[in-house]
Length: 164
Picture 1 (tube, rainbow, N blue to C red):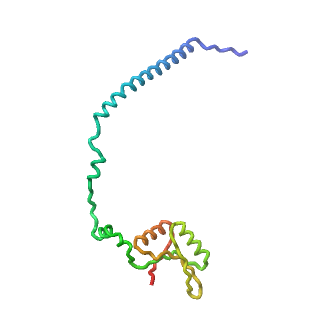
Picture 2: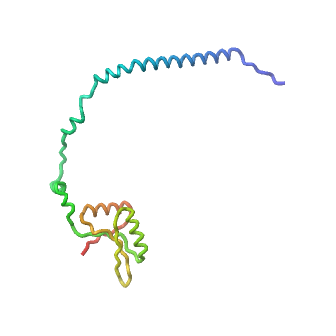
Picture 3: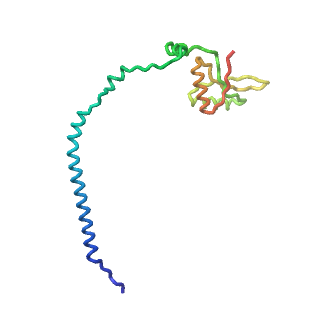
């Protein structure tokens, strides 16, 4: 038969002492937190009113002016926005040429998802009908540049052509 092991009395005393020390430590921390919590609140209120910032952004910032150097030609464009609307030359961007009308419509739909309005023009070259997908004509150089950047970002090749 197996021998029954009994726990010695010193193990029980050690466990009780550990538990009593833990409880005493928790009570000590609780008293420390209560003392520090009540003593900090009045000092924060008094120190907060004494150390107000000396800068008031709402009154200082409107008085500040920063001069940015701008070239004379850019200054004219800023002061007169109608300059950007002038037509430099009538340009179009051709983004594809297909023998199948279905492929041309597919590219046109892809461009529509990008927010670009494309048109499909049919042309006869060497007795074959080709369907060209074109963007434009653009009424400003700014719109032309933005469209080119959008096409480059989406890895769509294009060819810039001038209208006759």
